Amino acid sequence: MTSQGGRTEEEMEDNKQEQAQQGKAAKYPCIRCKKNVGKKGVRCNTCYLWVHVECGNISNELFAILAAPAKYGATGVTWNCDSCVASSARLEARMNALEGRFQEVENRMVTNEATMADVSKRMEDVERKQSTVEKALESERERIRRERANELRERDIRRKNVILHRVDEAGEQTTNEERKEWDLNSCDNIFQALNIAWRSRDLQESG
Image (cartoon, rainbow, N blue to C red; front, top):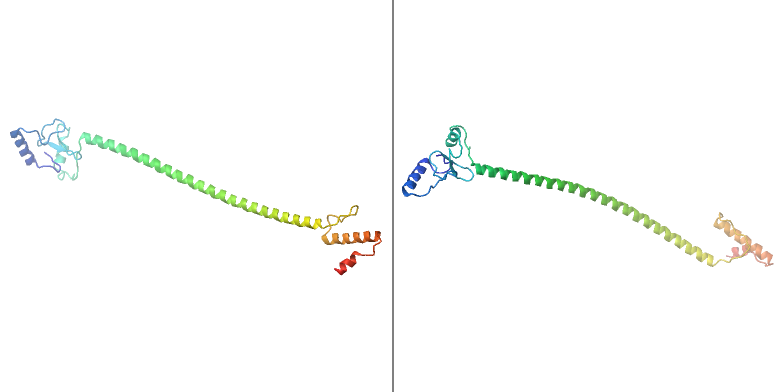
């Protein structure tokens, strides 16, 4: 019997004889025929259950290697029963499926990270544009405030003006000094027409 880490052949044989004498059930039953395994049997490296060479369809060559692996330079060689091989295959299939799912999740995470980076870049662009718009709005508000202040000053100046009908005014393209000179001359003409001995120049010089 090949124990692969179990009892020696002598111990197995002694145990078999003791079981036969005492009428007890097999201590090392074959997983196929349920009979006690004799000298030609091997133990599964996964479930640690025994099987006859004939029941496990194990060739003589493979049994010889399992029995004396060092002799054939096959140290560390093991054998697994069909059930454990099938279970291992199912487990490997599940592991591959899980690995595939993990890879899919990882790919999605990479895609999501790229999408988030793109969204972040777009948000930065929006923030820059918003800042530009806010600056433009502030500049426009300041311009409107200045124009409003100028308009109020103009209204205050006009409120103090004297309006004379049918008197020509200086053109719109004249400067303030030219307009002032025009107005003074107009006043002189009015005073002369009214025979008033007063000239605007006298007021200007006294001022």
